[in-house]
Length: 216
Image 1 (cartoon, rainbow, N blue to C red):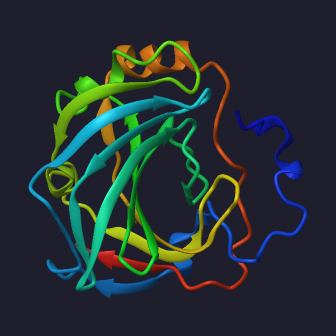
Image 2 (cartoon, helix red, strand yellow):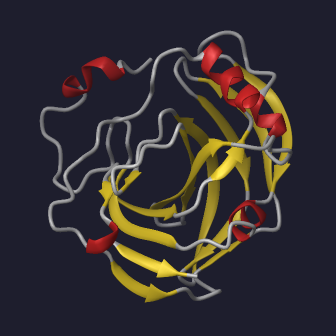
C-alpha cells in the first residue's frame, strides 16, 4: 500500500511534467469544443473490483475515441480529496477513468465529485467493497461515461502529465472535466469509512506546460 504521508520517497528522480496540477483558468489556451473530441462507448462494462489498501480499482472494458484515436478502457479508481485543482479549489473526491491504446499511450479522464444529490449511476460503485487488501472480487456493473459528462454541459481541460502513483509514468494525456458530478454524503462517507487516510498526490509544478480549455 502506498504511503501518502511520505510522498518524497516515491521517487528521487522525477520528470518535470508531473500530475496533478492546479489549473489556473486565466493561463489556459481556449479552444472550441468539438463533439468528436471525446467519444465513449454507450456503456462501460465492469468485471471485477480490487481493494488496493487505500483505493479501489474497478477493472472493466470499453472504448473511447479521443481526438480520432482509439483507446481501450482499463480501470476506474478514486482519490480523496481530489488531486487536481481549478484555481485552487479542492473537491472532496476525483474519479480517474484510465485508458490505453494499442501502442501503449495512456489517457485519463478525470471527473470531480462534490456533495449533492444521490448518484444512482454510481450507486453500485459505493458499496460491496472487498474486505481484505489485495483481494479481488467479481463486480458486474455498467456505466455511461458519456452520460455522466454529457449531463454536465461542461468544458474540459487538457494537458500532458503523468500518472499520480508510482512509477509516475510520464506522457499521460489528461482530460479534466470542468464541472463536478454529485454524490450524497452517505455515498461519500461509505467509502471514507473504509479508507480513512487521504490518497491524493501533492500538487506538482506546471513548468510552463500548455493547458487547453475546450469550451462547450
